[in-house]
Image 1 (spheres, one colour):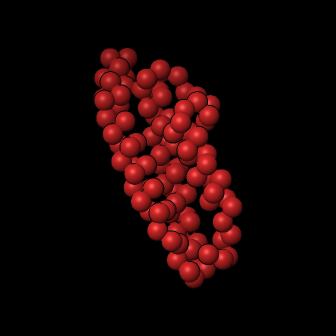
Image 2 (cartoon, rainbow, N blue to C red):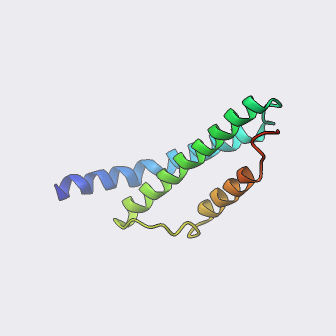
Image 3 (spheres, one colour):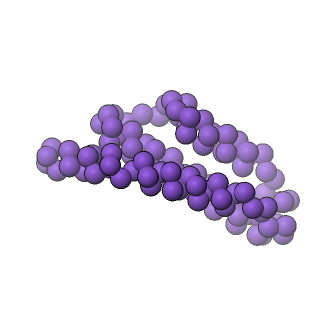
Length: 99
């Protein structure tokens, strides 16, 4: 089993950085556009943005695990984590009822 896990970690180390970059680029492209003006459209847009951030966060945690084998909750460890925190803060500042 440990050999299988080592192989998985190696594959993650090789593959995840480009996938994280792609997900982050997609997220930044998505939020660069103005959100929909209607409340329902805005709520859907905001939920999609939050889901994208959650996806990126999981990829970053998986990449950390692949590098170290240790799970960590230290969200301020890297520039990417700071960027994610800033994006979350910006999303939290948006009112779900008004665009």
